[in-house]
Length: 390
Image 1: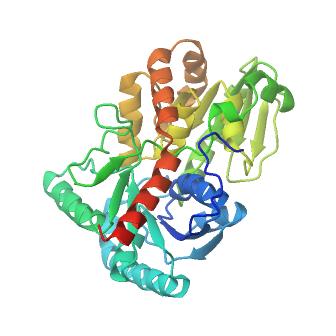
Image 2 (image 1 turned 180 degrees about the vertical axis):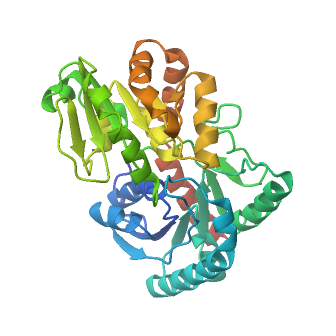
């Protein structure tokens, strides 16, 4: 659906070719950049994606050509948790993967000759710079909540060196002191805080009651979105299946569960493997349960919805975000190993566990940011500066 801040085609403006390089760990990076890609396409530009993992199919389903890239990955355990020791052991392979990714994207950029590169949590901006192509680096994480100060400082220095390879830097969060993610603050120069990238706004959709009628939902609706990279969704799916009986006892509630596996519907529980329009389902919900990935969380906040966040075990980014929002009173948090408490927490969250005034404040600020248009404006300003020799 088209919102009020989408660009219209401009016959006088040169059409651009834009290459968007996305981190392929999960769908969050590709998902949020699709909103920017749609704005660019509506004004007549051509957009090409590059990523790895399930993000390739995701971009293709949305109608974009997407190059498959070599994966840069960590080691995880069967419960979806981050395996620090296994990752350290794999470090040589990770470095080789980064080199392969750089060379693959360099080949793509030579072939496609884009006017600009957008790099979301990836290294496309570095590859673009190596070929003299203007590039923007975008992400929400500019600091890393690691327990060791020495390792944290090393990671930050390496990260900042990479970030500065971009001609422009966009942080996908509200400005400091209002920021959603506690580690999005940085002292790097030339940084623009665009606000979170959200593909749609609540006004694009029918009223909650009308969507529920279309979905044949009576009473309260809880949407449970099981997602994440590698083992993570399967580990969470197993935990959710273990509490089916308790969910079925919740009178007046319907559950729509997006799960990686095939499952039969049971009483008040419906299973789906793919959601055509996740925003419509969020708009219809009374409570949303999901991982605490930044993109998903921002979608939920933008739609002014009560939520329960289940951080991926030992994934410090998700744990930090979930704890931060719980402390602010705008989301609830539960650990994956405590999901036997989830049915009770769903009821409590619906009744009185959310600071609605603060949640409304955050939702309004996200809406006013119009982040996807800001990214497009940054592209135009950067290219205009190039033409003027700035």
